[in-house]
Amino acid sequence: MTDRLGAVGRRVVAGLGAAALARLPAVRAAMLPRLTRLVCAVAGGVLLFTSFPSLNWWWGAVVAAALLAWVLKHPATTPAGGLGYGFLFGLAFYLPLLPWISMLVGAVPWTVLAMTCAVFPALFGLCAVLVRQLPGWPVWFALVWTAQEWLKSIVPFGGFPWGSVAFGQAQGPFLPLAKLGGAPLLSMAIVLVGFSATAIELEIVKWWRTGSRVHRGVGDDEPATADTAPPAVVLPGVCICLVLFASVIVWPQVRHAGTGSGGEPSVTVAVVQGNVPRLGLDFNAQRRAVLDNHVRETLRLAEDVRAGQAPQPQFVIWPEDSSDIDPLANVDAALEISQAATAIGAPILIGTVSELPGSPPENPQYTNTMIVWNPSTGPADRHDKEIVQPFGEYLPMPWLFKRLSGYANRAGNMVPRPGRDVVHIAGVPVGLATCWEVIFDRVPRKAVLNGAQLLAVPSNNATFNKTMSEQQLGFAKVRAVEHDRYVVVAGTTGISAVIAPDGAELVRTDFFQPDYLDIQVRLKTKLTPATRWGPMLQWLLVATAGAAILAGIRHNRWFPRPIRRRSEAPVESPNAGTPTGETPPDEADSDSPPDEGGNQTPPDDGGDYTPLHEGGRRPSRNFGRHRGAT
Image (cartoon, rainbow, N blue to C red; front, top):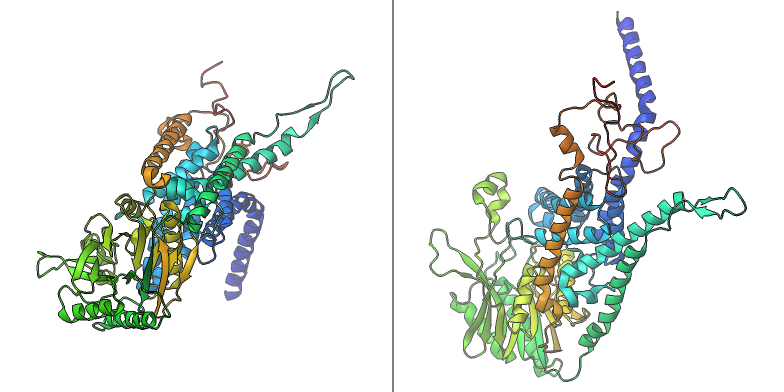
């Protein structure tokens, strides 16, 4: 009995194995083209990550855009496929970009954040497939990409612009374009170059396969002619040349802004990096430990000034949360800060957390505050953070997230306080973008429009690591070029730095080391085109992208074909016998020309989506006579 069961089992296994082996060629034929696109989408996301600090391979963003465009332009990529490829691209980008999140709350929130961010490249992939048949598709692709970055900067929970393509170009040759149109224009220019390169490649390959073949005349009098016209590379070539030309034209102005004209007033500013007892959310668990560190480092600076080893600063900038107890409510903290200001003989810009007046005692609310502290008179101007960080400084929808994760209880209870984003310290108007506010276009721009002649980015990165600090420093470099201002970055643990208006680092500190910087910078007053008209340009780009999407939908007869076909009554056609998920033999959609056997790859969503052909027309699927016709 056992032998009989064993024999039956062996026959069943052998039969299944033979069936699987028999289907391998078909499976391979179906998956290989799709696998190529999957690999290209993932590789593109990884390459986009390499353009960011600390690798700073700026060209990675161009190649990433080119690979993604090739995937989305493939005739077998449906709208659903574009959504999927875009999501994979985004996931391959954001997972390696944001690992420092896991140091704070673990791997699950890090993965969830990366997946949430990947939704926006997925939306780009969907919309790109809708507009890919419009003339000049590289331009529409670039506009749609700019629109998805704008959308990501406002939703959800106020947006998260971390990862905009522009912020990976701090050391790239296209950085001067930020002076013309800010981060949105810089992002669009980078992806436009990549998309245009793909357009040129596709046209050349198409011409090589078809148009390069010469048709010989029958007689001696009939000349030889090419089968098709030369490749249409003028528009993508012009796009690349325009980006290069604009960068070359603006670069001397940006370079001159970094070297200076000689007629601008200068000030000496000091940055104190006091360090913290430990990394993590409990960095300020020891009362006054962070404040003591910054006071101690300021006193060391004062000693060096008296010894002639450092210039006398006109004012000193401390980081965000540099006073871990509120000096407005604690006399001992106020006395210690006054001691440091008196020793250095200059006002200090300090960071602290203050309780909001009038908040209920059972649920007190706080503000993330920067205060100008004068040596003799104490507190003066103040700036309250106007864009507080969700899940860190406050918890959105606590009724939901407290049930989902225990980490939710560790979020603060801070509230935003809109203001002018400018404080006056030693008579100098200084614009403030506290910590992650630097990634939002509106904060530094509003500060400069309100008269800021110098930008400061006080930051507290004690809850993260050096990678996050490097990325934030790259964002500050883009802002320096965008607004033609010196930018002073002050971090509790680092990296602290002073950045020139051309994006160059003048000085910097090491990470997790107490230190100070003392340097002379120039005060700037002129407004760049990006500062003046940046939001209007962004709205124009987004509106044009929306119009292109509507035109693409109209071009597709308002709905993608799979959706429309499901809503229609079935009509008999010569292809009615084609099994679901297979492509009729007259429609080619693989990565390579069909073989003699006619093996083709179904579209990504398994339906019978027919790609748009040149000229925007679809061939009719109802070739036969209607039932009952003679």
